[in-house]
Image 1: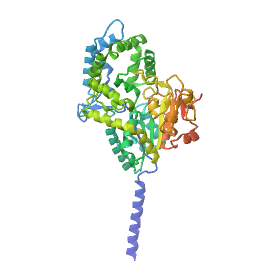
Image 2 (image 1 turned 60 degrees about the horizontal axis):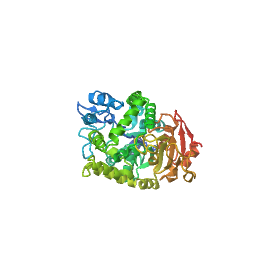
Image 3 (image 1 turned 90 degrees about the vertical axis):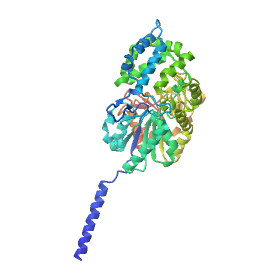
Image 4 (image 1 turned 180 degrees about the horizontal axis):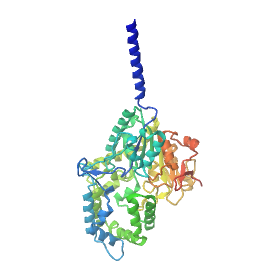
Length: 498
């Protein structure tokens, strides 16, 4: 009997120890993990990865100092800003083409990265293991990650960093793997995703292929590029510059990028002076953009060796403009329809065509969706669509998936400015959005430039962390926010009024 009692005591002790240790090491399933996705240029690109020669490729291949060190580029660029001298465009284009080839940022003709290139910030660990990420920038998706971390802890926040040049459908495959890894690590049944800009295009490709897996609890999409941007109409030679709007745009960029290389770049451009910048625009328009031979030369000798084979730039062409852009680029020899590049961009074009249906599908099958589309700024002043409302980069009508939007500086006609989904300033009618009850519009914030602890970042973080349901009614009840919001310089939010 004593032996049995002793044996039972040992078994009981073992059970107690095992059960308590299991609790101690159990995965935290109470919080839905959040994954953030950056946009264009969000991860630095390196070549000769893993070797002693590893080196960072300049952001977008642009190194102002290196370009200015080329005497041919410098001399002819200076002539561009004068009325008295004419640049040697043949020499300038050749020099620029050679410079861009040297950066190796471009892909192969089949739309693949060159051997040995990639990013060095791919982690499947939470941001509690990579806290530098949270403060690496004072704008863009790191700010949102930091704001979400303030609510649920950085141990529950992950960053899916990716080579932004790669085809969206290929990147979506990587995202699917990443989501599986996060679920396995945390024991969570689902994740929430917050995607900015080009990250929204990745999400569209992910939805298209993996929506039936039902792995995502909440999609929060910030000024997403899933339906493209009208600036890509440059691929169909839709060039139209407005000097006043270009100068205003440069001033906006100088003001908004108040740190780092971009601030220096835009300040340097502004320092050239309005008259000289106007001269340069006139010269480019008259000598290059308006002349088919010179335009073709610019595309083939400068743009093609720079970004011509990078799928991401092709995949932000609006769906309705794709066929026209392809036709124009094939005609001048910029695009080969037999190439792997064309197969990639054609595949994503089809994804764009199914996106509205896919968005409705994920919502109908239980996922929450929140779309933030900024407005209040004209588009890039390079094409005939510069009068579209945008956040300075992505057209509001595309980011919102279908809103009816007045031209910049105008109001909607009376017949379109009726109903509960019309903004008090009569600029937007959200009734035509695919998900009108899940879409918000903010004026006063440039693309991706969110401020930590500003109302806008807090709002986005609360949506992402599930502190409020992603619909107009729930948000209005909890925070008194309407569908149309205005941000001041500190990004405090107020409802738009008449």
